Amino acid sequence: MLVTITDDFDLKKIAASGQCFRVKEFEDGLFRFITGNHILYIKKCEEQLYEISCSSTEWEEIWFYYFHLDRSYEEVRGRIGVRDKYLRKASEEGRGIRILKQDPWEMVITFIISQQKTIPSIKSCVEALCLNYGDKITTAYEEIYTFPTAEQLCPATIEELREYKLGYRAPYISDATHKISSSKVDLQDLYTRSDKKVFETLKQISGVGDKVSNCICLFAYGRTRLAPVDTWIKKVIEKEYKGKNPFPRYKDAAGIMQQYIFYYALTHKKELA
DNA sequence: TATCAGGGCCTAG
DNA sequence: CTAGGCCCTGAT
Image 1 (cartoon, chains in turn purple, cyan, brown):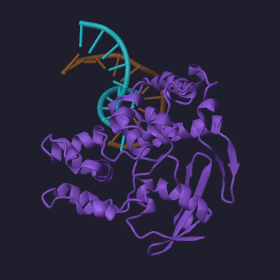
Image 2 (image 1 turned 180 degrees about the vertical axis):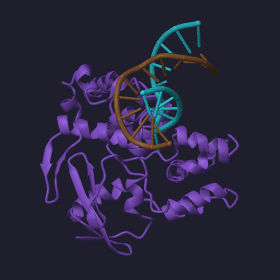
Image 3 (image 1 turned 90 degrees about the vertical axis):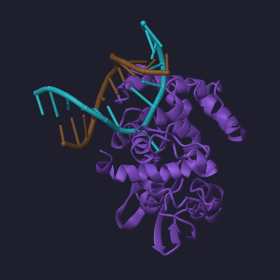
Image 4 (image 1 turned 135 degrees about the horizontal axis):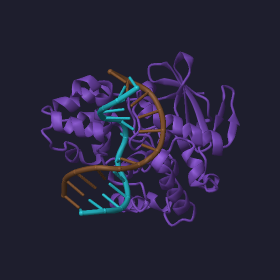
């Protein structure tokens, strides 16, 4: 079926924005997204018109929120001050990026893996976990494995996890798996808690520090007041903002601004050297 | 071949 | 509070 999307929306940029590691691009601009056991194939037909593989109900109940379409990013871009030239440029190039509302459990594991890894390396680790512990689903286009649930990952020993190139993160993943499957850390409960509560609770998991916790808050719980500072953002803050973090002033749009800059930094690595 | 850094975190001092 | 160490990969 077809859906109309009038706000900023660019599948290629979303896929390359470094927040989702399982999106796949096929020929002819067809993209596949997966969250939990829901899979979406989506393709742009013409301006603001997209062909999607799911029902209108699934679109309205899941994917609409997944893509954060209940918020106007055009309005967000309009808030950028004229003096903030770097962000203006970044937001122009990054126009179309969305902050995805992904599964919290999946984000916990994924961003624990992300530390001290490159994006391609993160992707291959995540795929390895899916292939070995997830469920196989066959669609019209491919065979694909779901991200394993905490219960599916529980039996994996630390030694076993290390076989998937997880290195020193293996015990972190084990800790996260057990704390979450035993509800010592209740991910569901966090949906209704304050930003600070979510941020602090997630840090109870070993291997989750400020940066990883911020990423989970932003990419799973949609806490756009939070702007993760990673090595790239750090470089930009030093070089372009004289060491002063530019995000807090954007309040509930800080996380979106951060993502424009992250994307811009990634695609202009040379200029940061 | 050797070195370096990657969407950091933890521990020791 | 800061300095090192850490598993492993891909880039140079």
